[in-house]
Structures are given as structure tokens and as C-alpha cells.
Picture 1 (cartoon, protein in one colour):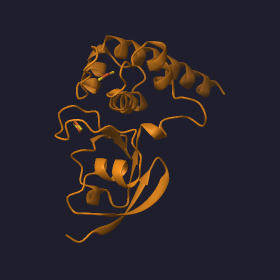
Picture 2 (picture 1 turned 90 degrees about the vertical axis):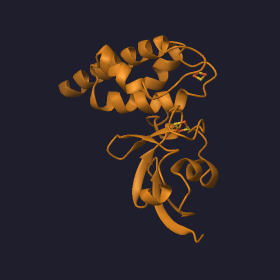
Picture 3 (picture 1 turned 180 degrees about the vertical axis):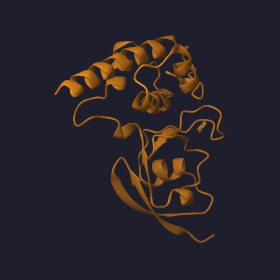
Length: 166
Ligand code: FES
Ligand code: FES
């Protein structure tokens, strides 16, 4: 089937890429753009390891998103979460709290947590549970992940206060 040229911005970088009508965003990012931070798991919308964020901070399962539907749009992947040369507070917090084991689910967890913290730096237990429910970790439970999110939330709240004062 004929390929279509789409314009896709990933982590602020513009790409033009020829895609087949059936190709997913996940396939295009990993196989065409060589952005392999986003993981390929079930490819059926069940595990969440392929999660990326849309331009409005939406949580997107990239294995279910058709690339052609993202023509002219932007996504952020785990490769785009860093702030300059510094890890984002959620990334630092995952490392500090041992919330990474084999790491396969980590990009999906980070993108889900970041989507939450971008709009809510005082998440309740329920908020965190709901935000993280779509990503399955095979290595461990979500206890360390939840601790990491709470710690990152407190760093981000402090940043908001300091920003408000400056
Ligand atoms: S790979 Fe997308 S939900 Fe599992
Ligand atoms: S850290 Fe291994 S699957 Fe989550």
C-alpha cells in the first residue's frame, strides 16, 4: 500500500517520515526514527510500556495510535523528558528510590507520572493510582514508584513556590 509522508515533531525535533496506513506511532518512532526509549510490549494496549505524551500532555498508548493520525502533531517520549543536561525530578526520584529494576516498563511509568505531575503537583494516593494504573511492571509492585512520584511532586511544588517568589 502507498506510503504517506507525515510531519511529526518528537521531543521538539521535526521529522518528515513516510508511513504506511497501518503503521503505528510506536513503530515509526522506534523503527523509522530510531527512538527506542519507548518500549514495545504487548502491542495491544494492555501493558502501557509504549506510553508517550501528546502535545496537551495526554497519555498516549503509541502501540494503538496510527502514525498517519499524528501528521502535523507533536509527541514527547522519555528521551525528551530531561531538562537541559539535567534529569527531570521524576527521573531523579525514580533512581533515588530504586523504582527502576529491569527498566523495561520505566519509560511508560515515567511518561505517565510526568503527565500527572505536569498538571498536579499535589497528587493524592488515588490520583497516583489512577495515573499509573495503565502501566504494568513485571519486576515489582508500584510501591517504590509511588514513593518516587510523591518525592518528585514535593520537588516540583518547591520549585513552584520558588518560581512564585522570584
Ligand atoms: S505495547 Fe502498548 S500497551 Fe503494551
Ligand atoms: S522494572 Fe522491570 S518491568 Fe518494571
